[in-house]
Length: 206
Picture (spheres, rainbow, N blue to C red):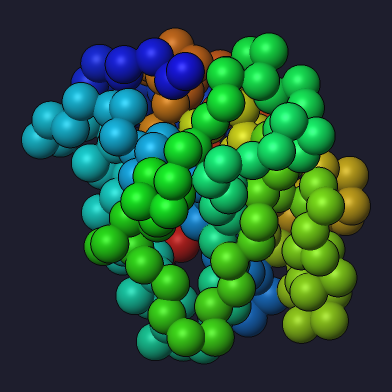
């Protein structure tokens, strides 16, 4: 079960100092919308100005710009009604997970358009049992811009794996949300110091 998530705001003090000085390049990058499904977003109390509301609106902004400039967009989405074999140890931490297609649906305001790839998500990492790496390499992409939920779980795990595969990660701080401000802050700090570069939506839109 996902615990209810109280609203919190993203503040400037949450943004760490980056180790890297990578330059975001839309021509070299793909945009990843990570697990923005009704089941996961439904755990949040949606309050104006909260991290989740900002994450949804900023992800929508990044999607609009990506589509206008033919930047590849990928989504991850966990499937509903997983078999015990597929779900495996996730059950010990999170129970049986998504029950039906309604819970598994990607938020309507972020819905994929024709030609955008929705990867079936089996574990925290978007690369696990998917062809994301092969797709990125075939497209000649060397950067992965990560948005979505939850920052300290799937987003961070995907960022670390992308780094280990040789992709520059741009971890979009204000286009993500987490269980709390503390969890969100810890994910940003980890990525900035170990495997990627924390960015804001404004930096990437520019």
